[in-house]
Image (tube, rainbow, N blue to C red; front, side):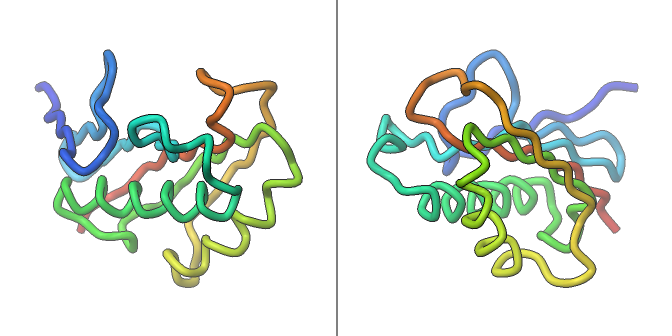
Length: 125
């Protein structure tokens, strides 16, 4: 049994990956960055976070769910000083109980202007 791939027109164009993969009730959302036609370099950490959480919402909706269906997020930052932006935006998109989360600080993203990436797993009702 295969899986369904979903590319979301409102998200940055994917490379050799799908924006969303759905298998049954499971939804896997590829890491989202603030990238949008090279504009990420002009954004502060709060704007990066807002855009990334907005992209996650668009992705889960494209799979037929909503943010309450996201059960796990993995957050990748290039600088721990950016973490307050995540803490500021997370409750604007997620309600308690919050999804499980892992946060990792990495040396860099695939491009230097990208400072934040979040991937997610959802389970649809």
